[in-house]
Amino acid sequence: MLYFYIVCLNLCVIVYGSLQSAGARGQLLCDGKPASGVRVELYDEDRSDSDELLGQNISSSDGSFHVSGSTSEFSSIDPKLIIHPNCVGGSDPISIYIPDEFITEGSQADKIYDAGTLEMSQSVTDASASSESSSHSGSGRSHSRSKKRHGSGIGKVVKKVREKISQHRSKSRHG
Image (cartoon, rainbow, N blue to C red; front, side):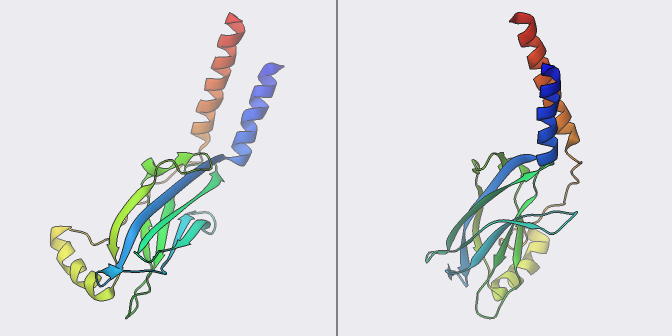
């Protein structure tokens, strides 16, 4: 009977997913000067439906920002920052994917991704993009990663179920 309850409990995990979080910080510049009032959003990028907003914030007077959020997913979340530059002359939104090692379980982001200092002005980023093709120096605009394909997450859940069953059997034998 206890085995039945363990299986049911773990099926609840499958149905609802696991709570995961991510966060990022950095500093934003326009033409070398701190960019205040810039909207920074953190999303979980989803292939099957629309991206989910995890959190948003506005950069402070010194251009710094911090944003974090959490959501429940069956598989690992795919967090990305979307920065909406407000530099004179305009600029397209900047997307930065947060590496998997900065994803933590639970409602609080324990590891915060440091995006560094990002220059957002179009004139500076255009100039650095042309020199980047040969030097890969990076100005903050070219942050990207190839999107890895996550399975359904069932493998992780099966592993957790097996661990719990093994723990239960071990306790039953010794207790």
